[in-house]
Image 1 (spheres, rainbow, N blue to C red):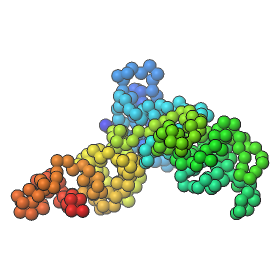
Image 2 (cartoon, rainbow, N blue to C red):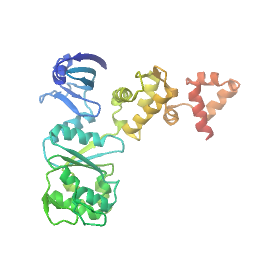
Image 3 (cartoon, rainbow, N blue to C red):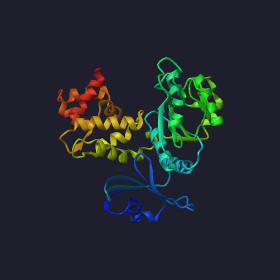
Image 4 (cartoon, rainbow, N blue to C red):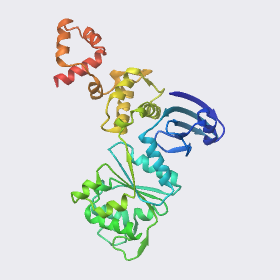
Length: 359
C-alpha cells in the first residue's frame, strides 16, 4: 500500500488523472463506496490488477487537499458490487440491497442515488413506524382522513417525485401494507389515505433488508409477488469479515472524522487485533470500537491494544487459557508484570482478561 499526499487547484477528477497509477484500470471512490471516477478497461485481462483509490478530500474553494491511499486488488467482492452500482444507477429499475446489520446498506443506496443524478433522496425506516403511521408516511393523507389529520399531508412517494425512495428494513412492512406497496409498483399510481385523487408515482425504489426475503416469503411473512417486484436488481453487501482488506482504510477514515484534536494512529499490534476480529456488527461496530479507543487514548499519539474494548481484545487472545495463566502466576509468585511479559501482552490487557475469567 502507498499513501500519497497532494494538493491541487484543479478539479478533483483532473487531479486524480495526474496520478501515475491511473495508467492501469482503476476505480476511485471514497470509503463510503461512492464512486468519484473510474477507468476500468473493457478488455482487461483476467490477471491484470485493478487499482482501488480511497480518497479523503477536504474542499476549500477551488483548493483540494487530498489524502489518497492506493491499493491493488486482483479481485474483490466490493469490485463486483461497485460494478453493479454503476450499471444500475442510470436505470429506473427497483433495487434490493441485502446485507447484515451495520454493513453499509444505506451507503450503497446513497451511492446508487448519487450516480443516478436523480433528486431528491428520501428515506424511511419501515421498522420504526406502526402500520397506520407508515401508510400515512408513504402515501400521505387528506384532511379529516383520521382523528388528528387537521391538514393535507404529502407522503414520501410524493416528496420523492423524480428522485429516489429508500425503504430501509423493508421486510418489516406489515402484510396489509405490502399489498398497497405492490399496487404502486405494478401500476405506478396511488391515492392519499382518505383521498380519491389518483396520483402518478415517479420514483426509483431502493429497498434494503438484513433478512432473506425468500425465506420470509416461504414463512408467509412477506408477499412473494412483492419480493419479485422489489428484487429486479439484487445487490449483496458483503460483511466486514469478508473484506478485511478494507479495515486499514476504514480505520484511517473513521479516526480522521472522529478525532478530538490530532489524529492518532494505531500501533501494528492494535491493527492486527482489529484485522483478526470477525466484526459481527460490521462497520457500525468498528466505528464504535474506534470511538471507545479514541476516548481511552486521549493525550496519546498512538492507540494501542489496551485502548481497545475488552471484548475485542479477549476475542483475539489465542493460545492463552485460565490454566496457563494460573501456572504462570504460580511460577512468577503472583507478579502480574512478569506474567504479562511471559504472555506477550500488557498488564492492562491481562487485567481485562482476568475480569473475563472471574466474571
